[in-house]
Length: 355
Image 1 (cartoon, rainbow, N blue to C red):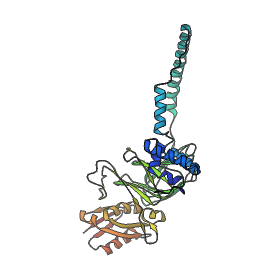
Image 2: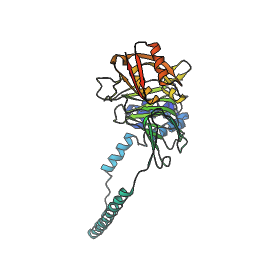
Image 3: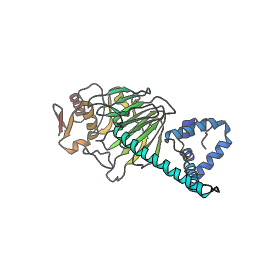
Image 4: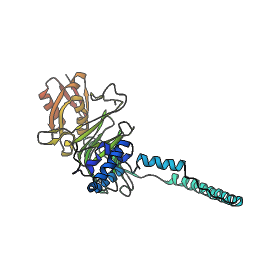
């Protein structure tokens, strides 16, 4: 049996039955947690904080059972008998027509003019291949943007909401503000956070997208709605397998998958406690038992080159290596020293690898 006596708000949040209780989607979970709360009044404050965090992270949605009751009341309101004389009804009807007509004209005119004049201002930070950039947002959040990436921030960020859109890879260290959850939008999934540190990798030319949680708590969901809401604990990584392979086909793609597949694992930690998924933030690349085709994607963005294999079998060679300040030629030579069955040729930004 789980001992919840020392649970904090985040511990309650990652419990799936507690989430269903907060969402109002399961009667058994609702009944269980109502009894638990009554039996443990000493934890009332912690549970209330957990419920508040759930509401914030779920976009301030009311529990489903409350929404159902509200809908029922709106569809079948309690009848009240009010007797009015006929001429009073006519006066009310005429007044309503006049008011509604005025509102319609007003809204139509001003909505048309506002639509013409309103232009949402968006500022976009970008990096080229071989470039990395550190950004500090208005709320104190720091973002390290990896190569060939972009981060879009709308005007008014941190006024009421904190939302950004990412293409590529970035490491976020989010300033805590429980009243303004921080949201990251990507083409494949959306992430809701409070104060935490995590890495997001969502390149459009790769067959997988992933999020790795280092500290704190995040909830996320696929853009297409598949997989429901996922809550990550520190050291966990979620990977989304895209249903359509880009031009550069990767061995990570599951060929039979018709819909994006989602997996949750732990991040990869090696030798000196380096985390493979975030090593790039320390200006190094950690290659851990990866095939040449996967490594190609990383090297192309890191060194601003284009790599071509003349023989498909070379793509299956697997390597483990650490890259720090080496040039692309030094990296290829080091890989060749461990696997002598390939040659490379560098002409400007074009790299050709053959047998």
